[in-house]
Length: 125
View 1 (cartoon, rainbow, N blue to C red):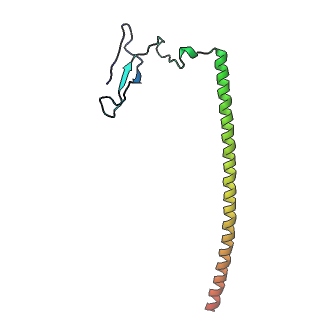
View 2 (view 1 turned 45 degrees about the vertical axis):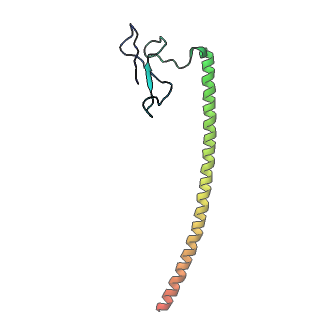
View 3 (view 1 turned 90 degrees about the horizontal axis):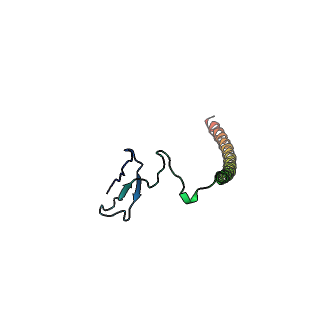
């Protein structure tokens, strides 16, 4: 069920907010029910409020929060890079050991081939 609300003096282009109302499966089975309504704030068109009015911060607090977030992001990135390097070293060690095993196996197969060639050539002589 969709409904629209328009007050007098509002422009034709409205910012519409979709909000889930009560029982999402009401009357339509498993289809969610939405109600479309106009915003309750009087912000200029194109301006979006990102925080509630009660949690507005001073520019200094916002700068500190941005700095804190940046530091946290850098710390997480540093830890992720460290883990990535550790996994890469482990992977390289695994590949090196596999190369060593395959080289030994290859030498054995070459020796066996030479032995079989020697046996085969001695029988044909």
